[in-house]
Image (cartoon, rainbow, N blue to C red; front, side, top):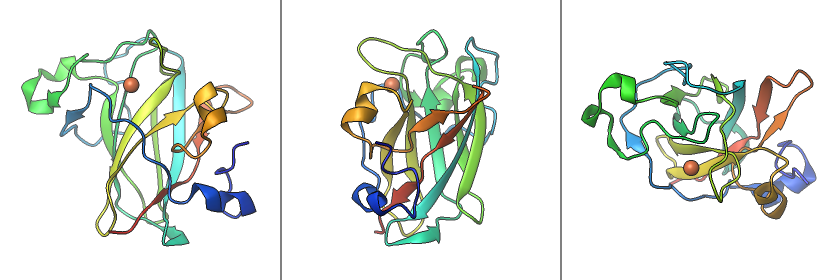
Length: 179
Ligand SMILES: [Fe+2]
């Protein structure tokens, strides 16, 4: 079912490029670089996300220095803030479980956060906006791999899988379209 999981899998072709998903109402622009999204200790089970971004035009080729803007709820299903705008509109302490990471030379990225909570009617998810020179900007979302959304659309972003110890998740590869 997780057709996008392996780039070399014959089924992966149907998931290239990664599909877009809704931006949602609570995107705050201009969040600084950080690999710790939970800067102020919001509630939730610790989560480490590892992922990789590749070029949909040459799927074995990494996208380096892609800018991945991330935002999500805490374990209780609340955004901080429950609002949008620019980061400069808020006091720093009001901005949590949000941040930007860059991909390395091999297209990988990682960050630590908490497992997002549910808010009706959505399944747990993490929002992404990915921009990189020479590529179309992609707005998408990550879902836990056991959600209904993933079952109906396995190509939506890098789904993540709970590993044996429960604390680490591996995002599926995200494929960016060229401009
Ligand atoms: Fe959301």
